Every structure is written in structure tokens, then in C-alpha cells.
Length: 136
Image 1 (spheres, rainbow, N blue to C red):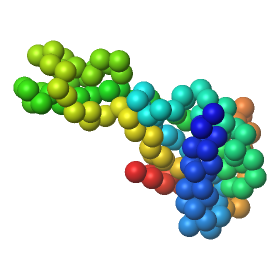
Image 2: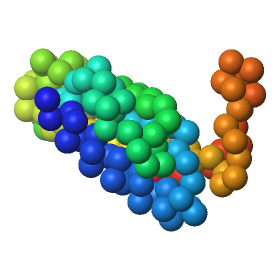
Image 3: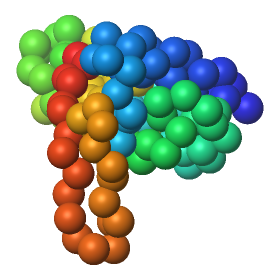
């Protein structure tokens, strides 16, 4: 399961970001994962909850956003949606395409708790004071 190694690399980036912001605790991490990234989101989520122990992301929530697959046709030049198993042009049907989107694994956003703020009880419906760090 290489997802654990992916999580460890991800958490190294997140810890660096937290350190740049006075070692703030991390409340949420948002990733964008494409279907051709080679990562299974369910396995990534399981590995994350093992890898996050200790450090500023110990109680962080992982949000995984999925993306679609987009290709550009070399024959007609049109950009269209495609499926992971059929990277063909949606207009002319040609298979000579270039992948534009769908293979990414991107750290999109890290939400940090303000230093000294005690996170509220989530069941109370109160949002913590957070700082958003867009990582893209």
C-alpha cells in the first residue's frame, strides 16, 4: 500500500506549512485526487488516519476532492471530458489525445487553527477560528 508513503510525504509538507505559521495545529487538509493518479482515495484516507498521529495534524480532517479526466485532441484540437479507460476525443473520436487533467495528486488547502485557540466541540455547531493556506 503506497498510500502510506504518499501520506507521509503529504504530512511532511503540511508540517512545514504549520511551522511557517507559528506551529499552528492543522484542522483540515484538502487534496485533489485524479482518477489516473495511481492513488486509491479510500486507501489514502485510511493511511492518513494512521500517519497523522503526533505533530500538528494529529486531529486534522482529510477532505479528498476528485477531478474528472480531460483530454485535448491532436487531430481537431478540442478539449473534452474522457473516462479513465477511454482517453479519446469526445468530438471526433480520435485516440490521439493529450491528457490535460485527471492524473494529479495536489495538496490544495491547509486550514490552521489560530495559535492558542481551543477547538470547539464539533457537535455544538461552532466553527473554530481558522486560517486558510492555499497550497496550490
